[in-house]
Structures are given as C-alpha cells and as structure tokens.
Image (cartoon, rainbow, N blue to C red; front, side, top):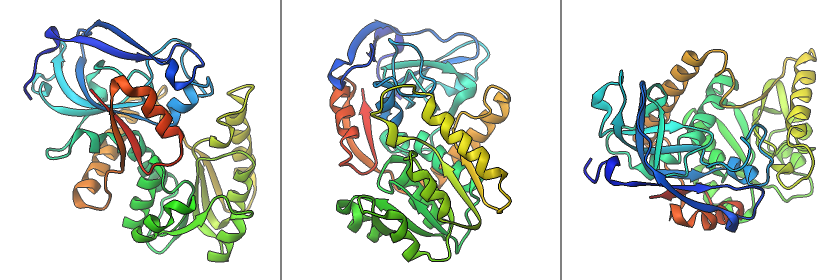
Length: 348
C-alpha cells in the first residue's frame, strides 16, 4: 500500500490516564510493536469514538481495564508486518479488527485470527463506522430478534452510531421502523423511511403505541434505566426486546456494575414469564471466553455481511466527522454532544 514500514515509524498512542475530562487525555510516544507468532501489526487508518469510550473516561464501562490504558474499540488499517505462522499475503491488506481497548494508536498488534479483510473499494473511514456498530446491529437484528419483512421494530437513538446502522439494516430486511431521536434529526429519518418520535416527549411509549397499537416485533434499547420497562411493554406477543446499553446511567456515580446487573436481573425475570416474549442483554463479546473459534467465525461472517450490505447500497457509512488522532479530546467532546448523526472517526 506504500508508505514507510513500521521500522521507520514511531508509535503514537492516546492514553486515558484516569477519570478525566476529554482534555485530560494524554499523548504517548513509543516503539512500534513487533509481530509475534500468529500475530500481525496494523498501521491504523481509522479508529472511532463509541459510547464505550464515553463510559470508560468516567470509569463507568462494565469491564474496562484499570487506568491508565489506551482506549479505542475498533480499528481499520493496513497490515504492515506478519509474524511466524501467518499468511504473508496479508501484508499490505486493509483489515478491520474489534479490540475493546487499544485502538487509539498509530499501530496495533493483534492475533491474525481476529482480523477481517475489508473489501476493495471500501474506504477506511467508511469501514470503521461499520465495525463495532455494524457487528452489533447485524447480530441484534438477525441473530437475536430475527426480524423479517413486514414486522414493526422500534430503534431508540435512531440517529446514533449503532442506531443509524440498525435502522438501515431493518429497512433493508423489509421491516417497518419507528425511531426515537431529537426533533432536529426527524427530517433525515423520514427521508430514510423511518417514522420518528421525539425522545424528549413526556410519554414516548404512548406515542409509539399510537403508531403501533398491536405492539411491535422488536425493540432495540441502548438507554436502559427506568425506560427499559416501557420498552418491554411495547412488545407484541412473541416479540423480542434487545437491550444493549445503559446510556441513562452514563453520568451516574456509584457501582459501574450495578446498572448491568439490574438489567440482567430484569431480563432473567421477563424470560421466565409465560408470555411468549423474549428479552436479551446483548454484548458483542458474549461467549468469546468459552468458544473463541465460534466467536471469531461469527464475527468474520457477520462483518462480511455488513460490508456486503454497504457495497449493495443497503446501508451507507454515517461519518459524523473525521479528526486526527491528536485531536481525540475534541472528537470525544463532539461524540458526547449528542448533536451528530453517525460515528466520529479518528485518523492518523
């Protein structure tokens, strides 16, 4: 792909030193890592700001590592070095990888088995918007809720990183989509074919029930908190609630585990009721520790499906803004502002 090799470059990382405001992020310089057996080194072309980093800087992400660490949930870049036992033809290829942490860096060392090739013609920033967001949306829609044509679904935060992908995938599947968002995003949602509801309304659930009086097939809820009960009650018989976050508790103090444990308790209780409805708390990493090979296979297959949907035009890359890695604090502020559609992307 051209450009200097890893041996002529230095490592640049953005470090989260503790519970800080975005301006408290630090830049650290070091030596580019060397690929060990079964590993590759990737030169970052695009990484992103997700809700996870917003929680991590507050110390609120469920299983974040101890401070200090390098945040960054996913990366798209070019393989610049391969270790022993790795297919050497990977060198020069553009790949995507899901990390959880470590992505806000100029170079990343990962297991070769964890990378997914990005199709020719898909730009790095476009692909980046669809790694964690695309995997999350695809698996919730098709593996959990199993949405089919003619069904009605509710997507909370329909203008957000995951929400905007969910909306497009659901529409491509032939579903009717009701999406919550602030009023300034409603016109754009209508143009996509979404029926918008203002999440600031006094009774959002009543507004949704007015649009779908018989209930809905699926609700995708990243908010959590007390509103999760309303999401459950919106379901028609046989419907599915997929909870995948607790944005309502982002700024709370106290235990970071409690909101998730409370959600898990509700999910267990609801699934024990004899009403034919289903509830899930979705985490993209679920099952990795017990079945790493299956996890990697599903991730590779599902992300390949997402990239194929992009190439078909079923979905578009929602890039809210592109900023260089050195302006990570500004990028984090922008992502947290709630004023953007899609994902804020960091580039070298």
